[in-house]
Length: 198
Length: 202
Length: 191
Image (tube, rainbow over all chains, first blue to last red; front, side, top):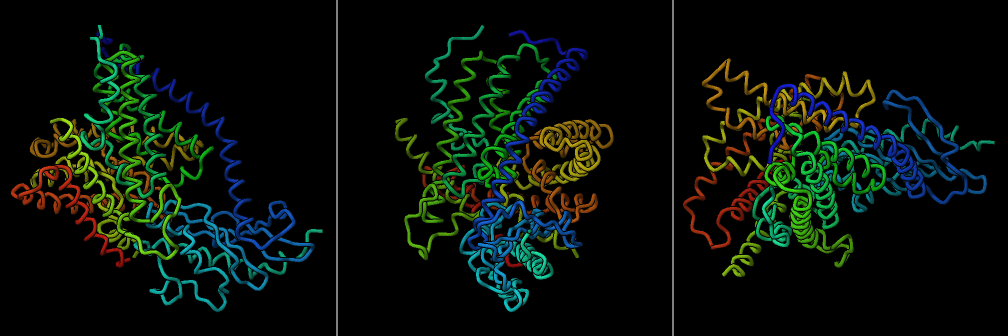
């Protein structure tokens, strides 16, 4: 089995060629996966909307309101929902960078009176098996039908009413912070959101 | 000239005799890290097998073109490229699995199993043998990870492949889906594997 | 304040080996003796810190501005591999005794998932800065060292234990690692 000689020029050329081929292949795959990736993200959002909001018949994605807020890096996304012309609630995307591994992004569905309908996790990179349990029904159940104006969303060890995730207090705090932020933005813009688009 | 290899043995060795997880102790990080459920274990192992297969193929094809001194960096570039492809494809088409596996996807690149096979086998054997080697090792890896994932999921969540077979409020051995459980479950699985294989060897 | 949280979290609560399963290969590989464990820990501290520094800068000032984030995995591992080579060469010249102590572990560190893992994890820190990323890396290498050295001392005792046949070697090591991980689980209440 005769390999190429390990001369300097051979080594450099070989590595160079391999790198170029690799780079081009990756660039190519990146191109063809960009759109499906975006589609998957959008599908996830639409799916999330269906899960966190009460029944609606409009298209919240079309009526997206982007609000600039000091609390979020990008603007805060708010999706109003209507059923037969009536305002039935809105989904707000809350986020916190304070997760153990960074960004925790959740979609919180609010009823018009401010109660939480449901929460869906959009993005997180928490420790598998520990922080990722924020997606479990058992955990989210704690937030449903609670009104943050009376129900303190903080973790119990911070004086609030949420039972933290086992071994993932940092994750819990980030989650609650994101939910609280979503609530505050919702209350601020509720008036505007409840106006139908026409 | 390639010696005549018993291809059947070549394939089978990865499953029992040289099982990457139970015998060779390669690829331990993902083995412990993503097996909190059978589906995750299976998904991770399949992704790893894909990279192993592609890398073995490419390395075996161009082995004569790679000067000996730069073979490790060359292997790394090849392996890292396939890992990146897997990353991108998963994020685009199976986002659920992509999120579950998290940081362990890019870590496939340092899975000693893949670099190990490239160095020990694919760089010295022909294409067909390398393919079978990858498939055998891959299957062994899949069996190990799925078994571990299933064991941990059954004991820790009362479900298998997300199919719950205990009541809503049943008390399960949560320990098994937490980190210590990974070590402990693998310890006993390896023990069972050892007992089974030494029995058949006799 | 953030820094203390990072330190405690990295060393005890989210220990890179016992809770996040990164760095398992060297963890089982060199922990048969306490002395080799100390050597490995030193090498890891060195490489992990410099690697995170380099990859953070690369990510911040090259990959992100050029929109090449998908090349992260491949560039990071190449940076780590080259760094290890350079460190080896430098150590030989600059400090032969240190090279004697750490030298043999350095090539093993290239494929240490902990190094690549920490480099990637550092990017996700809140309000991440170079200083924070580097501190994160140092904290995790301390956590690695702690886990490794404790485990090595346990293993030295295990050598003398009387075990059932199939348990010797890998299974009992895993079991003990599991118990150690269980002990560390108790720290989760800290943060």
